[in-house]
Length: 340
Image (cartoon, rainbow, N blue to C red; front, side, top):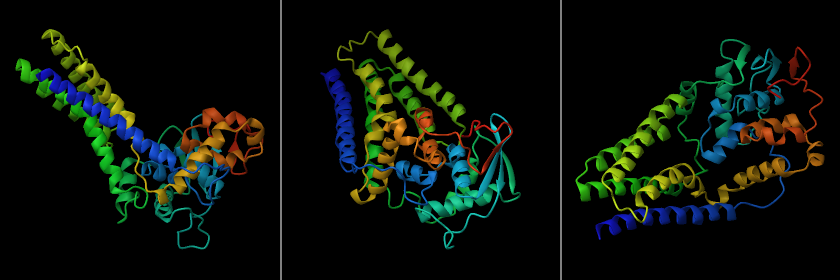
């Protein structure tokens, strides 16, 4: 009877996660407008894409997108030095949002972008940067975002959105705890309590301690998570647990599937905040699924910042006409190089 109680709890959590992902995933999809978008509104920035999709801007992930965006706006020119290095020349100041020359889509994003641009060229008008490295450190981004009283996600996400994310994450880890508690309750095996806690600590560090470098965080956290899972499986085998409903393996599967995949489908944006999201989704579809004949007439360099921000350059770059280099770009061999 005790086994059925814990197995029922595990599968109830899994069913709840699947229902949340299905209901709210369909809700978000249903509220997305279905229309053809061939270009974005004037003043759109790669930072706007991150803000609308995930509620925050991570410019360290958008090195190439920001370089091309600023060059297209006339703020900088670019010289390719070698395979992975470019030299940036500041041509003019990025106008403040109160200026008549400022063209922006969202004031909250633009003022942060202005501060990032000013930070990059605060000491010199020439910068050599590596294309595979972030333009800004985590401390730079944290300092700039912390200087604003209003959060970036204001007007994009509601409190219900974050509540649903937390609930989904909790439902994803509870089955692993139930499997461990069953070991303790049945066999007085204390590893059933200790190792789920270690697993949760590793998962927490990986998901939320973003100040720690990614690869160090990944190895460190996965060491805790993998060892906890491995020991839990070993204890089930050692104690010859008759897990005929596959409770433990289901708990391990939903631990990863729920926290890394299904939680992304739980989206609770209000309908009036989905207009911009819809435009981005439809523009991305236009770039991905349009034929080469249609995209050859589209300005590749105007679209490139958003192609980088969407992460779809390998899939679409061959559809565009890229023979003529933009005026803001210079290279020793007269070719596009890694940036373009």
